[in-house]
Amino acid sequence: MTGLVTVLGSGAMTNTINGILDSDVMLVIGSNTTETHPIIGLRMLKAVKKGSKLIVADPRRITLCDSSEIWLQQRPGSDGALINALCHVIIREGLEDRDYMAERTENLAAFKEAIADCTPEWAEDITGVPAADIEEAARIFAAGERAGIYYTMGITQHTSGTDNVCALANLAMITGNLGKAGAGLNPLRGQNNVQGASDMGCNPTFFPGYQRCDDADVRAKFSELWGTEVTGKPGLMATEMPHAIEEGKLAGLWIMGENPILSDPNADHVRKAFAKLDCLVVQDIFLTETAEMADVVLPAASFAEKDGTFANTERKVQRIRKAVPPPGDARDDLSIVNMVSNRMLGTGQRYQGHVDPLYHTVQPLANEIFDEMTQCWSAMAGMSYERIEKEGLCWPCPDADHPGTPILHEKGFPRGKGWLSAITWKGPQELPDDEYPLVLTTGRVLYQYHTGTMTRRSEVLESSAPNAYVEMHPDDAAELNLADNEVVRAASRRGAIKLPVRITDRVSKGLVFIPFHYKEAAANLLTNDALDPQSKIPEAKVCAIKVEKIVEEVEAVSLS
Ligand SMILES: Nc1nc2c(c(=O)[nH]1)N[C@H]1C(S)=C(S)[C@@H](COP(=O)(O)OP(=O)(O)OC[C@H]3O[C@@H](n4cnc5c(=O)[nH]c(N)nc54)[C@H](O)[C@@H]3O)O[C@H]1N2
Ligand SMILES: Nc1nc2c(c(=O)[nH]1)N[C@H]1C(S)=C(S)[C@@H](COP(=O)(O)OP(=O)(O)OC[C@H]3O[C@@H](n4cnc5c(=O)[nH]c(N)nc54)[C@H](O)[C@@H]3O)O[C@H]1N2
Ligand SMILES: [Mo]
Image (tube, rainbow, N blue to C red; front, side, top):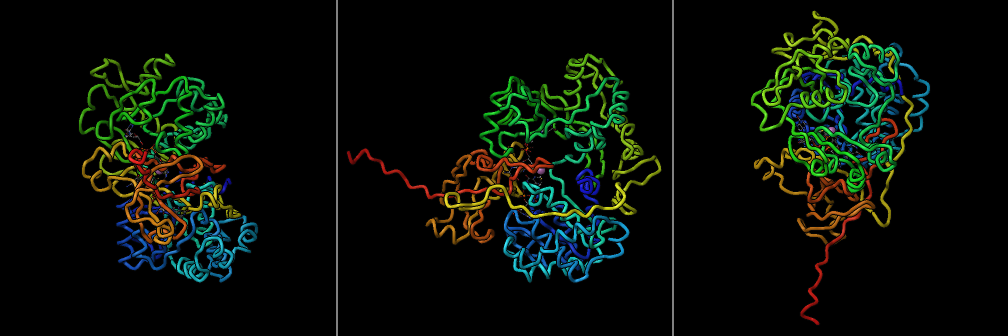
């Protein structure tokens, strides 16, 4: 997997948002871009108008399908087979970029062997996509001089999520599409500043700047910089923590800006695990469902109430400025973390800082932390607040004269040659059966954001998408004798919810979709917490459920 880590590095886009307009072909796979990244979706639609050919691969008929050259409606969890078959056709028909492959990639023999039997007919059986459509899509993609791949959670939220991403990297490399404008491998990052959080080391294996904590040289460097001995053992991923609590390996949690009681799969299990903690601290801008369980709640300031930087999905580091003061006792996250760590470590004050008007303590200024970051990570070494005053810079930006790097891998990959992975398709962990005959996939709608802590407080947004629903194909609804909008019971092996049915051919027969925003019908009571072995991402995109008609219980009183 070294190939994956070096090709993908931080999980950011290799190319830029505006660069989408330079593409001849776009493959959008597992991304409902117009609803979840509307600005990027607009760029895609503009690119189509300019003549770029759009291939959509999604189990649901998303809005982008209307503008596509071809739509591949694969079964959820079958992407590995679909992508391998696309590669198979490209190699079989000699449509690959041979010079690029020879010069810039390795492990070709093992890759070719892995896709040798992945014929379009084989993939049709697994994915449900007609073999001829797979062939056509492969030809369109390979014919593009600049073909970009855009993917999001439809690709990653699977027990085979890492394999899916590696398979897409293969497709980009065999067609010579890594390292030029309008192309690339582009995961559209989700949360605001999730890229910045990754860059800063919000990951159990890395210090800031993707520097491994189990590397002795890296540890020595940070021990010196921070004036304290730093430990070198990788920690747990958030998704591993509920199990660790149950096994008695974890007694305390400090959660900042997450609401896992609603956002983690198998939510009932998460709630039971959290109840066993000795101490739960939650730092949030609202009293969330998770905060309600906490021993201590630390009120945080929102984005508009603090200074700092956000890094966006194209690795662009941009300034944010305090527009209004935080309400009441709320403090910016940096001050909160600093106040706690000062008391825990007794290290005193390491920054010049400013005096907090309420607490009369010295707190670091955001730019002091930024400067520290530029000292410990070469990719940001050339950045400063002065340089990003008006316009952000894309990392890597190694020195003060460097213009930043909007397009990654133009001259080569960090590891040298790009690794073509040999991927064997494995299906989802839980498949439908007689008892739970439907496949459930979950995701988002335009007007709501995750667990709704923020969007459900906005009257406009809430009135636009006020309730949960389950999308179901007309044939499945007819079998259960359901009317549109009728309230049904949806149940998996892990839990059950009640919600109205939305009868639509947006989904195929056998597939249902539930948005996970709504606490009154929380989709995550149903979802499976099986994890991808490498990335530890849960399989939020496939589990088996049943949907039942609710039969009104007849009041027995008058009969007795
Ligand atoms: N309005 C809004 N925007 C958001 C968010 C939000 O909550 N609301 N959240 C943000 C965050 S953090 C993220 S990560 C992104 C997520 O952005 P997206 O990944 O675009 O959003 P999802 O709705 O989770 O799922 C994307 C698509 O995957 C498809 N899909 C389901 N199963 C499969 C499968 O097996 N294979 C493939 N190829 N596709 C499948 C679904 O039909 C859906 O169209 O959105 C960000 N933007
Ligand atoms: N079934 C299913 N489950 C999923 C997914 C799916 O597709 N299907 N998607 C998954 C994905 S990709 C994601 S990213 C997660 C999202 O899961 P979460 O991150 O748990 O969801 P949010 O509701 O966005 O919670 C973020 C919290 O941060 C708080 N907050 C906002 N700004 C600040 C701030 O500046 N400081 C602090 N301290 N707090 C702040 C908000 O009030 C909110 O409570 O959900 C995951 N869960
Ligand atoms: Mo996300």
